[in-house]
Each structure stands twice: as C-alpha cells, then as structure tokens.
Length: 245
Ligand SMILES: [Zn+2]
Image 1 (cartoon, rainbow, N blue to C red):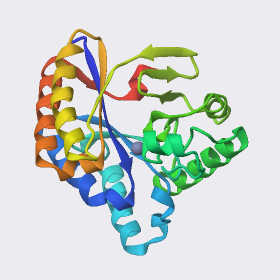
Image 2: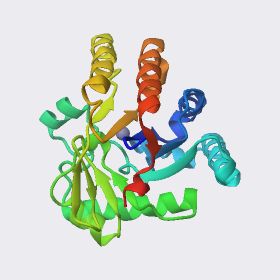
Image 3: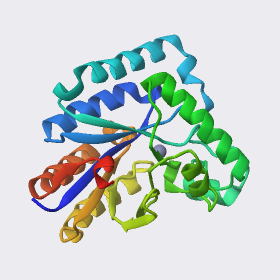
Image 4: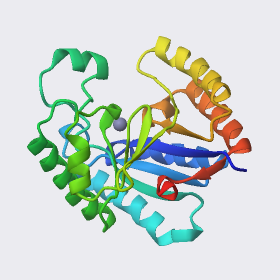
C-alpha cells in the first residue's frame, strides 16, 4: 500500500475530554491505528488546566496512554495547537471568517514567541516532553510564525493546503478532508462534501483527515466520518506526521 493518510483530532483539551474519549472509541473500531492529537494549553482562556476535576480526568487519560505505550490500540502523536485557540485582538473581519479562532493571524513576532514559549511549558507539564509539531488554530497564521517555530526547533507545521517540514525547508501540498458542524446547513454540505473529496483526491499519494470534538455530537456527521475513514483506510497506510521526516 504506497498511498498514505494522516489522521488527526484537533482541539484536544480537558474541556472536550468526553467527546475525545467517544471519538477515540469509534476511531479504534473503524481501524485507525495512528493519530495526531492537537493539544490546546488553555482552551478559550478558561484556565481549564487549573480546574481540579477536569484536570485529573484529563491527566489520568494521558497517563493511561503513556503507560500502555506500544500496546495501546491507537498510537498517539501529541501536537501543540495554539495557546488559547481564541483571537484576543478585535479585528472584526477575521472574527467573522474564523469564528474568532484565528489566534495567530494578527499577533506580533514577540507575542507569537511568548505564546509558543508558554505553550511549550504547559505541554511539558502535561506530557513530560517538548512538542516538535505546531498547528495554528483554524490553520491561520501570519509570516512571523514560521521563523519563531524554527527558533524553538519545531520540525513540522501545516495550514489548510500545505505541510511544512521546517528543518528540511520543504513544503508538501497535501489536501485535507475536514467537517464543519457550526450550523445545520454547514453540517449537511460538509457531510456530502467530505465524501466527494475523499473520492476526488483518491489518486493523491498523501491526504489528511482532520476531525474536531464537536463533530462527535452529531450522528449524521459521525456516519460521514465513518464512511470516509473506512474507505480511506482500505486503500491507504495510516501514518503519523513524524514519519514524514
Ligand atoms: Zn482547532
């Protein structure tokens, strides 16, 4: 099987733990063996990592995975995904386009540096290691992000169209299949659209499938994800981003 697929779950945080556990159960049933979890240090500035009940539930879940190691049903790669996942500026146009989640679109180089540095610190508190991959929320960022990521020795980042291998200065164009759930209309169009895209991109060597915790609140979206994932895994090898190095 020479064609490959990267599968990721965005917005992994204590806030979404129940949805993430549901997603994980279903993904294992559908045959997923490798996944990237995109971790948000402080989801929507709620300081959720300070909430004792949520924090201990999340920590327990993380520890279980680390203890299972190679025996775990799904092999996990942890990725740093912004810091707040929230735009803290006041640019109305971008808030309209991104639902206020284009956190890294308008930050200055020093603010980017501070959030990346702080993100690494919180990441290390949870996972006892430093991340080597960073994905900006909503896949949106400005020209200052990549130099900051290189300074902090990140190896990989991505946007909606490309994966950037930072150490090699190499850019790969890789299509992504992802669902929208914000309104019933978006839900319906993305369910149909994702099935069409997985067929349309069938000839590509590498594709990405990216899901979000809220996708798993809607049974029709879950059915569409199941169809795409099982189709894709029948034809492609499931790999992690660090296998692209
Ligand atoms: Zn996200």
